[in-house]
Image (cartoon, rainbow, N blue to C red):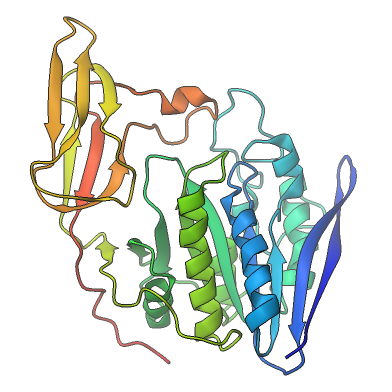
Length: 342
């Protein structure tokens, strides 16, 4: 089946002038659902862009119906700023005042902040036509790739399972039917409109990693297959997943101040009970403490990072204070007992 692929643009009118944001539009000859895939709503969360490049290649060969709208640099001004937000500067906090984080502005505001203006421009072209949205974000490097879903929507559990990433994290905040309330995330806004969507947080900001791109590509491909856009069978549905916050999880904390030296592992890796996780080198007497896994499971956290501090590399410095969480190991478990809607 022939697939038409074009590069189109959305023009956002910012306080500093216009910016043209490019996206791929793919259409098959046969009607079907429309899948929107977005990445880099925060300018330092860029791994989804490479996922989309590869997804487009697969779609050109295997797409059977419908449309795909692929926006690899959805918040292009923030990408060009090389930082989370359009307004971010050196050593500024990740957290910003209301209206400056684009993923709290949907459906946007033509007269609002530049972040809200970008959302307002994208909304009619990309969001309104979409039946399903897959929104790629990125945790810091020390947190494992995780699908975020909402318990208020039983079908969301199904879509989290379809991503086949190792971890899924559920929340229970419902969304009402009205579009009137501002400040939504993109996925919550989709739910509010009676559409579907899910967010996947890949592991690692400011970089594009081979393993994370592979995880993201499988998630996107599986979603497209489940929607009927691509032929074939989804991969990984038989693999164990960790469903948080219900899964058993063990936190390994720093027994004293010092530098954490990892043992060559990475988030999402499987570890066995007793396996060496790393060493903590004391800043007082240079004593070295081995850290070993108290149980078998999967690494959700591996290393030290601090949430919502400055966006420089200092946030990822391996120096830990006594009591800081260095490792979190979780066991695979069953998904929440919610009746799925087909």
